[in-house]
Amino acid sequence: ILERDQESDAEVRRVDQENINTFGRLNARLYEVRASRDDLKKKLEQIDDASTELMMGSGDSVLLLLGDAFFECTEEEATEHCEAEADRLQGTVDELEEEESAILEEQGTLKRVLYARFGQSINLEDK
Image (cartoon, rainbow, N blue to C red; front, side):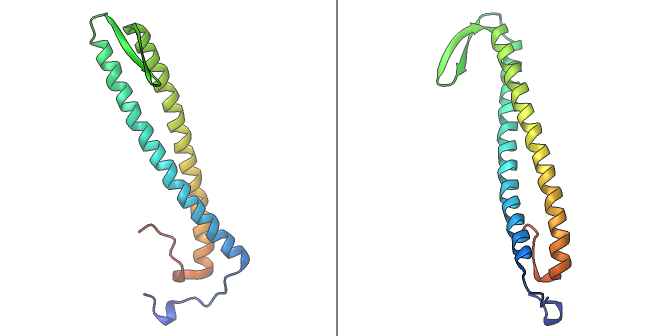
């Protein structure tokens, strides 16, 4: 709780409210981006584990899950599929990390503007 002398009597202008709303939307998107990135990283680990298992295989045919169906293929074809899927997922992870950086940069700018205007009367930090 702020002491009386720490409070800001600054009136909230329309531009201030727009900045606050933008910050809130960016914060929500940041959590979505981080959750998606973490999910994709888990899938990448699973694909890496599958690739390792395929390398230790005996050259037999394997079942490859595509969508809701299993397809019989060679270990080489399954390995190629895993590599292509890993490349695709890594590209998406890279895009999400770039988006996270851009969000954090824009939030930093908004924080400076809003803290300069409202001081300690506004809290823009995570819990």
